[in-house]
Length: 159
Image 1 (cartoon, rainbow, N blue to C red):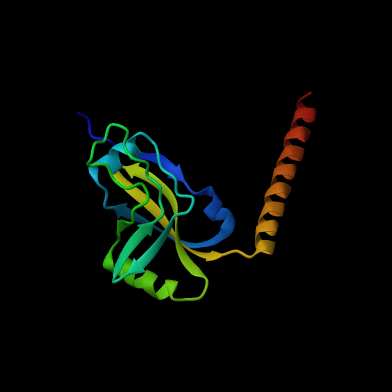
Image 2 (cartoon, rainbow, N blue to C red):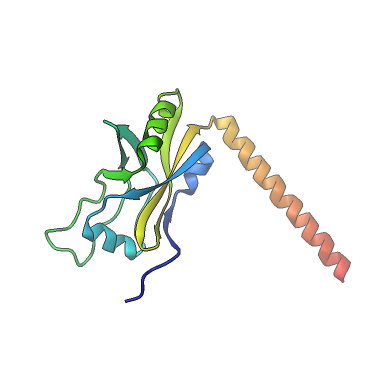
């Protein structure tokens, strides 16, 4: 069987980019059971309520929903169990210091396979206030309107 290469996205947390200012991102491996990997290979997962926590010098991923594997038996996993993140010691030490600061948290941004191994992109983030969210939406709408105006002008030029 050929070895899997490249990056295959499984799940993405788009809401995290809306709700948080992303300060730094880290790629972490995951400690998974066999049925979790099989379920992920079917492309089934949700990062919506997920968050990461540092506890006892280890990083843990909480509330990430990986549904039970349909062909699994009594060996099936719990859908929302906490999963260990595999990070380098220096990264964990740095994150421990940063997450102590007020308003900083660790949120998962994406879950994917990289060269056949399950990885999660975790971000050090600071929560946005309501007015920050409105400002971001306004900037996005302005950018979209400007792009439309440019493309309309180009169409008129061609005709």
